[in-house]
Image (cartoon, rainbow, N blue to C red; front, side, top):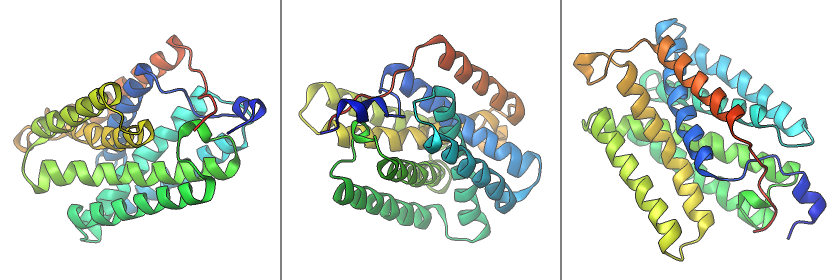
Length: 252
């Protein structure tokens, strides 16, 4: 159990409806923003991954160096994980030829291993237990795996399995709705349900992002990647400053 002093050091937000809305917007922005740099700017997946990876490392360093919770810093770091996750998953599939199914399997293994080691090392993977640099490092490593996995999983369902972006969005949205019902109606661990929802918001954002910016003949709406990214970013900024974001309280 964390002490009151540790609780005051929590640098992750309390999970509310606004949290989930921003998370979905951020994951969608990760898809459109990642595609804008790698495809529209024609920098390629490897260079784009390097750029976003550097932004991610810098934002994580600032986040971990900070002594208190800052909503802007936190969400910048989340957005960085979604963009690098997009380009990294695309690089593995399209440049290395691993494929989304193989990439999803490897990333799922890495994600589960991260959660397992985190649990064995710290005693809890609940966000309410994040009050030390070590637990925060596990938190961001796990998020990095989950964001990359979500990209690969979304593209696998929509593209490889041929279900399309709209149908895939409905599938992932439906699963998230069932998780929400389970949260309120069952005794399933809230920690497990949180991470399940956190992971699945990423493929939802990935397929919604593709739905917005992919060509019409590929099942998308062919919107400008730059415009879509800018609109999503504005929406996130408005939500961050319009609602008060409190840090998660201590506990397991």
